[in-house]
Image (spheres, rainbow, N blue to C red):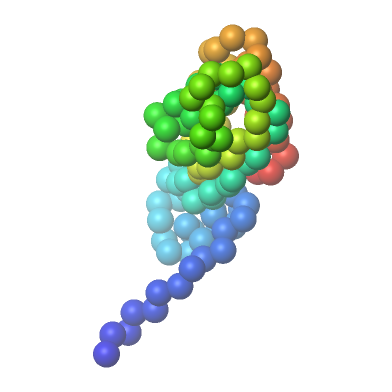
Length: 121
């Protein structure tokens, strides 16, 4: 029989991540790089124009995250819908930068997302 112990570690904050990474003896200089990768969040964005939802999804997929959008989003109607953005804090922060390069409506979403991320970190 093995001596291994496998368990789930509940990491909710950057401090939690830093402590757990430190506990296993990782290089202290690498903690700042790894900690944002240890926190996964699902963020609901409401009333997003479906055309924008597709752009947000494409940008997040390019970062290794995911965005759940309504199936009718691909009809490119001028409707709005709710979407779920899923990724690590690192991916979400990178998404903010990517979205900030688009047209004003998506730049506004980028700013709102950035504010939310500063509150939850």
